[in-house]
Length: 128
Image (tube, rainbow, N blue to C red; front, side, top):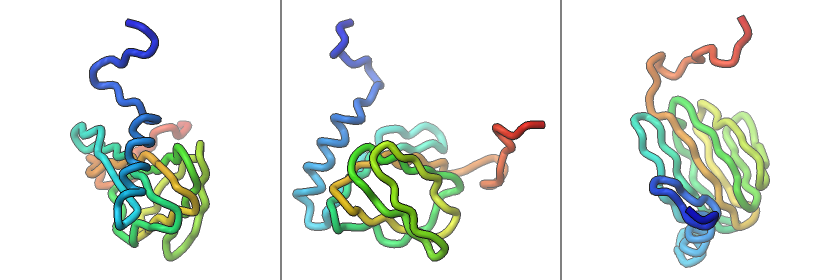
């Protein structure tokens, strides 16, 4: 296998981000999304959003994070507003929230749609 070949099942996030930024630019809503991992309760979605566009307020899954690949976004809720730039990762609050693009942006939304403990902290990473 040469360095530019991709194994089956491997997603090139840079290519996916470019593709969906182009689709978002052509969309009247200024956004595009593609679910690229769907494994049990785990979901990973590429989301591209054009500067000035937003994802309106919506409910949170039991657990989720957002990793910005390009651009800058604001993740907002009633309690907070956090700016996240390329390279940043943020946990999504367990409250209604929305996303606004400050620049043309692409991010990976990782969500867990159900948990055995109903969304409670599993204690992973805690010292005992």
